[in-house]
Amino acid sequence: MALSVRNIYQQQGISFPVISIRQHHEMHFGLPTSIKKAHSVFSSENDGNGFKCGCRKSNSLKLVILPKILTKEFGEVVPSWVSAAKRDSRTGAQIRTIKGVLTQSRISGTDFPLKPWHHSYDWNYFVKTDKQFFYLNSPANGKYDAKNKIAVMECEWDSKFVPLWSLPMPGDRIQVTGRWIYDCGHPKNGKHRSEIHPPKAVVSFREETDLFSGNKGLSRANQAIVYINKKGGYINQKINDQNYTFDLYLPPKPSDSSIPKFKVKKMIASAINPIITPFPSDDPKLLRVTIPLKGKNIPSENYGVIISGGWSDPKGIDAKHIKKVTVAVREAVFKKDKDPDGIIFKKKDEWYLYVGINGRWRLFESLDKGKRTLNHNVVLHLHKTQHVKISTNGYEADPIHDILGKSVGLSSKVASSSSLNSQERKTAGEGIRKGFLKLGTDLLEGGDIENDKIGIVNATFPSGKRSTNSVVTSNLGDYQITVNIT
Image (cartoon, rainbow, N blue to C red; front, side):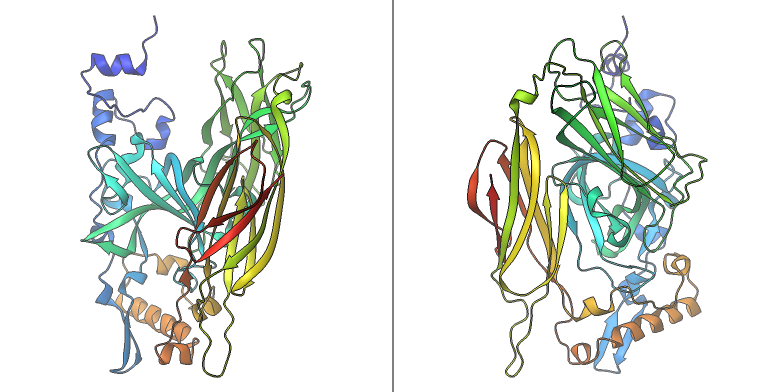
């Protein structure tokens, strides 16, 4: 009789809850030979001390805008990120992979605006990591709980290089591969947040329906949305130095005689096809997927596919329970005035709102306060067990938005280095100073130059529920959206 991982753990005296290391050992870059030792190594956290890896104190770089009047400390900006693997003997490689569940999926809107740090704002993936990846978390990470091996890691990818079709929804399963770092800009009690920043590959999973060959109508499908890109913003990473592997679990069978089906939709033209194998072969529960990029020539330097996994259903058993659902986010009402009018001039708010419906995202730009028509309409075909998911987020832009992506004349290599010499730091400081002086009187007069954070909406509706004009308010109460489901 074959032993399960649980049996092996029990034989070696490992207490529960155990750390699952059965799948994708290569994600840990060097699995200890003893399972018991692996459990010990991968269940303990790193210390979160970014100063050991090259982060600087905030007062190590001061920008004098006006002598004795306006001085800003920007020491954590250069460098903003350092490799967390530098002082971690368990993990020599900078590139790491994490898996977990998304708690938030949103634009930042408050990033340091100048290149090479940012070309645009980061898209932030907040991942509640699975236990076998807890060791990559820092005590400064969100909802950190060492006893129960729970933490939320923030993964940040410059949104200029991330297409809307690839963006996941809160609550989705996700797998992120990229540079494992400490964020120097947000120390907390001497600890720094650990992140994947930037990613180079994101795989997210969602429930859908699809039409597979030989089936009578649509049937349930689970999808993997795969996006891989060399470009990350301030730093680029090789994407053909490894293969990317994951498991796509299959939905419930329509009948006992059903066999696995799958299809691939290429979102980015490529001659490289995923390798897809039902597993286990005698009674498949999932599809083992490999994106075989290692050593390949990838002219576009990015890769994107959506893989659907499901079952044969020639009698249309699933189709009987699948209905067309039209979802419309009809309008938004921005209730709070982020930029109040002056005595003479009326000021326009600039709300930037991302609206996602079951992974179909759209950006609405520069909206003024008050009621605004959106009409973001999506037609879905959902099984009675599936749901409509709606998510919104964004920011209200202020003068700092106008210098987003302006260059300070530094290379990304210098900006992210943990060992800058005094001249390089002086040059960096001067470049930052000149960039911020472009804000003019707003900065010199101490005005409100920073973008304003706005609330988020995460709403779920059963697929069978029909509603007209359901009003959902953001978690900060600053705006509301009207949803119509027919």
